[in-house]
Length: 262
Image (cartoon, rainbow, N blue to C red; front, top):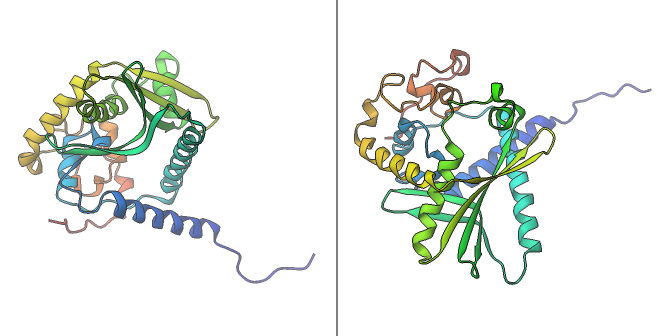
């Protein structure tokens, strides 16, 4: 066999560059100049997270591996949504990636799937969630492995969307469904969400808006709701500037704190 010389393709580097561009495009399309709105996906999370977004604080760059994981989730979302739209019946009223806004609470987001049944006057909304084994076990595994302290972020996010939809459809009821996809082995679980999360989500957003003027003074691990649960800090885009004692030092040791965009 002849020895090959020269450099091979840096496939990982090339793929990461593409993912960075996709992220930049998504940021431009959905979030640029929208910092005055709270993200619906942040419902139930640390209060101070909304402050950092509100002042356009610089987010910590994601590691290449995390970028690839997020892309995997996007691909599953796209596949499922594409299948639904291609095979829907003429009588089905289905929308995907609908922008939801609740001006009274300053909240906006994008809903994965909305299905309106005009015969029953029921609007069913779906959120697709891809999960790794650890997260799956925390929710569906043996009782001893379940994360009983976790705030129900997914449920409250979905309830936020329904709050924004129902006022536009007088006389219609709502139904909320989480569609879980396990990335490791493609298992699927479907969970219908209790209506009580509508109350929880509303109370949460009211509290965020009440606290927002003073959240810059809030101290992690001291003030209530900053964070809601300890593990949040190790997945937060603002871990490098927040100063939470719950953040693992190795996650931010190489990061230089930037100037806030305020």
